Amino acid sequence: METLREIPLIVLGVGGVGRALLEQIVARREYHKRRYGLYLRIVALADSTGAAVVPEGLSDEELKQVVQTKAEGGRIADLPFGYYQNDVKNIVDLEATRETVVVDVTASMDTWEALMLARERKSALVLANKLPLTAPLSQAMALYEYPRLRYETTVGAGLPVIVTTKRLSASGEHIRRIIGVLSGTLGYLMTAVEDGVAFSKAVLKAKELGYTEPDPREDLSGRDVARKALILARTLGWKLEMEDVSVQSLYPEEWDTWPLEDVLAELIALDDDFFSWVDAARARREALRYVAHLEDGRVNVGIQFVPFDSPIGQLRGTDNMVEFHTEYYEPQPLVLAGRGAGVHATAAGVLSDIMEMALASHG
Image (tube, rainbow, N blue to C red; front, side, top):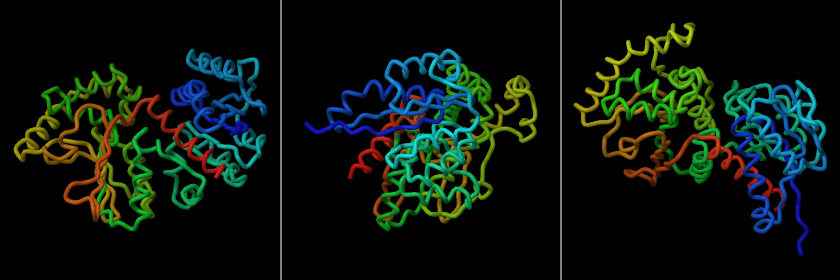
């Protein structure tokens, strides 16, 4: 019988996605063993203040303990096998084998030096963290040019947006434009106002349902969609900076300095504008969508009118969708659609990236 091959993993970040990833790794132990002859051995975990480093690998019981502790608001440092730390680079430094996969599921630039050390060690890198990939281009290119990097879940969660972009680009096929609804939150809001719901009420309902960030301005500013669009553009080879992305915020700039409760109370002032946009779109037999539009080296993020009968025009609710209009996919675009958010879908995408890197290292 073939010997079970162990792949050491270092996981940076144990928030919602990190916890879901640990749960999925444990749940799929037998499948990975039977199908691929692989065992994912988690040798280190880190959150913002603590770490657990076990070179022989954390047991599944210990991983479950981590998940429970973090879900209850605890810290890795408080666990019997945890300790306090404030420099994740030291964690990567402890595990120098070439087959290590370093996984960044944080939302922080604090992992940058750890990622660069892992790159120097020729470890595989799997990122759900968008911030390093949207850093200044002179800095971020160290990642984009690294062949042992996967970052599928930074755009569209579990949807294969990045790999599709790479494959179309690698073939030399002319990509005329990419149009995407890349925020489930904003997709929900656009279809709600089309259905006659006041924008202010739609935002509060989305917050109640957990669709928005705790501070909805993170969604309504368009910044998150802009980061995803920039990652797509850079994946196409476009040498763009974040300031090159044109972004339409859904609220006045001065609201960024206001207390959240004041912003939520003032949302009603935007209702008439959104009703006017809906009326204007209907007069043109079009739908109102918040989209990322990439064409001719330019990236625009904001509200657009799209044909009712287009794939994006027919999109409803919180799903994401990306249309690729290319040399061969015209007039009907290549369309990817489905759940584009949620910790479990994102974690599944991260796990797929990990497995791809693990299997590639064996080849």
